[in-house]
Image 1 (cartoon, rainbow over the protein chains, first blue to last red):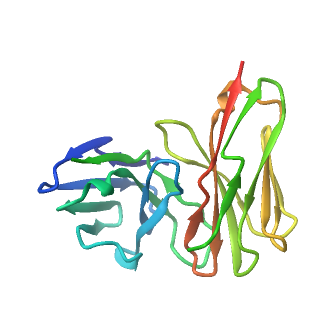
Image 2 (cartoon, each protein chain N blue to C red; image 1 turned 180 degrees about the horizontal axis):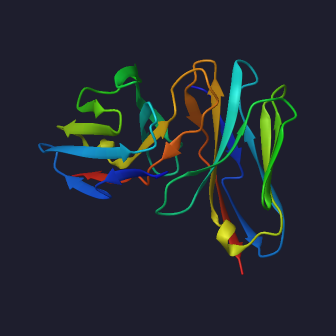
Length: 115
Length: 111
């Protein structure tokens, strides 16, 4: 299995809602990533987990809360989002984090709309 | 914020024609340069990881070159086919091991 899966594909939420994005991989990768992409812009790194520990937080607002329950799963909990948080959220995984040239394998993304 | 630029933003190619486009990146603290191909509604797919100055990589009709001293990489598509229509992203990996992406070049191949 060489896939990274993300659910849901689309999500519409109000500013007072709490929702979660899920990401899963079964390639034995030990690094997992969340990226945010706005239209016509580059994907921007949000968080990196390495061996199930948060290793990078790119100064992301606390209304985004990542969680890595085990080496195959990565969640992004959303609470009190703003309309400007509407974007495509991409998950990726790689065999390890630092110190190697390893590729990142991406999921198809969750398209989030905040009303 | 690292400056990774891709040009052009988009291009249209006639089927059978060849094309190329550019990724420019910082020439300092270079670790690797990644190329991805991203079709609409699918996952970005890794094409190449390039690490050495002068590297050339090839995958079918797609190839890439790397110049780390001047900070650019070219991606070439030979004999474009409709299935080559996609957005091609480059990503610079520096000594901090994080990927900084360009905004992509969107290629549309007309039959």
